Image (cartoon, rainbow, N blue to C red; front, side):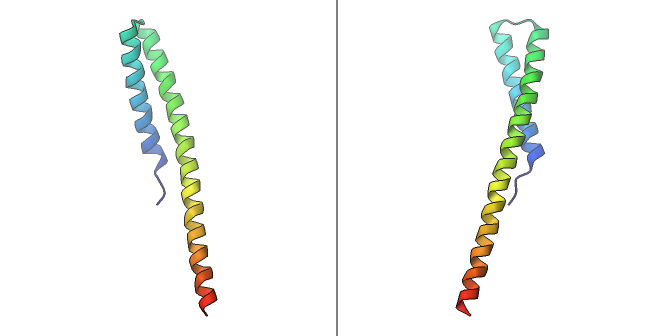
Length: 79
């Protein structure tokens, strides 16, 4: 089971945008500064989530391959 990269990274970026917007608003930043930081944070969150999900997918793929190879080798030794 491979994870879908784009939807998870996009959701992470949206959450990061709103969290950074709310924090900037609470701290008292001007709206322009608050929105710029929120957008930059969302882009960074998207990139980090995308890389992390690709790493998880690589690990899952390797585990599935290893599992299939061990099943194939176990079947060969029984013959």
